[in-house]
Image 1 (cartoon, rainbow, N blue to C red):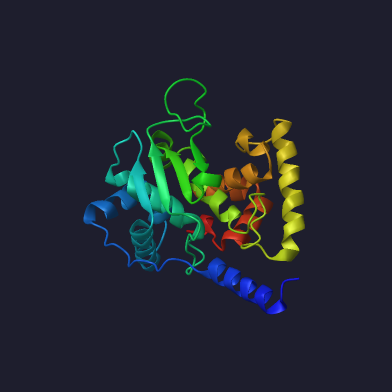
Image 2: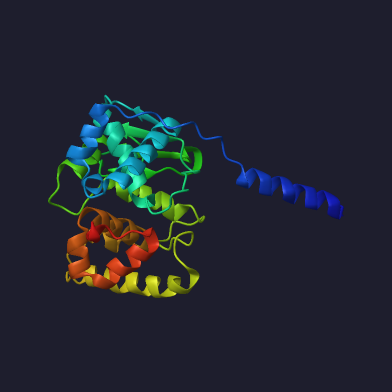
Length: 257
């Protein structure tokens, strides 16, 4: 039988390792060209007042300092770096102290890819993915989808925001559409029921929500979050109850800006 003091020691080490995170590097300074990209292509940033714009730029600088963005078969331009960082900051902007403890690298592929991470050949339908297993701590994004998310302003889609919402969802240990780190416990079951109702509406072709959201609750949460940040005014008009829950989850009210 293992002595109790040894078990306690193992438990203490586990807690320390779980809480430990690398020291954050100081934010990088954004150039005038970087700020111009934000002002021209990032609608979320455009809606902020000057004080929050400054805070947004600081969080962009912090993300760029601490997460590596690498092109795989793609040439990375400065707009790609700003778009990735913006996608990371937008969902967590209501949480000033939030850091992505579960992300080290964002890999940019030129276009869609398959489950074997190949971006050439057949069966390439994936636009973004949060890694698991040996890919844990990494995210893969299609460069084409990343750019469309910010440069097409008439839709409700943003692949990179979608993937960062998955990462937030994953922070409680399960990608299930119920972000327990962000949503008070008493609202979890009502939120789960509301998601299921909306999924059924999508499956009956009675919803304007992206049909991919009907895949499961985790995809619904990511898809409806895209809608929330891309077209908050429209979501609030068409789906006020969903908007209210997302406002509660993200601690943001983008339709009011």
